[in-house]
Image (cartoon, rainbow, N blue to C red; front, side):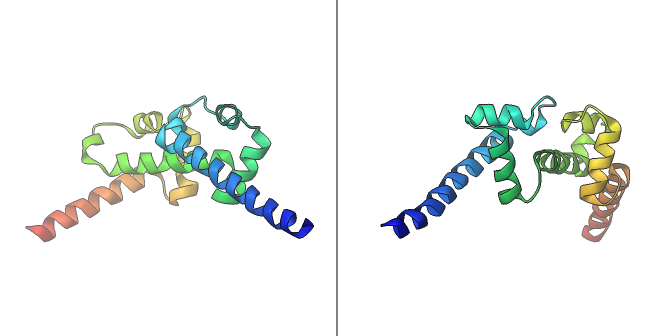
Length: 139
């Protein structure tokens, strides 16, 4: 009987981790909490009815990073999408950074470079060049 209990604990633990992972994704992505400049692992834990240590463990195990990097990855994806989109052409890089959830220009640039391996301005220029090349090929 002890063997069954020991094997069921990891399964129960894995199921609980899956459920927390889904909740993290729903809150951070679905509810777009990653855009909230004041949102923290502590607030996420409170919202999910658990503690920050457990949230940090789930994020590390399931997303292979820490809370800050997870939030930054979602924010940078949004910023990249905006930098690519002609609809946001009139917005400065700093305005896009703010729209993506950053309050500090340098923090945005550092996170962007760490994730995209280029600067936001270079990324925007490269994407514009790619659009122009695609247009030229289509003509």
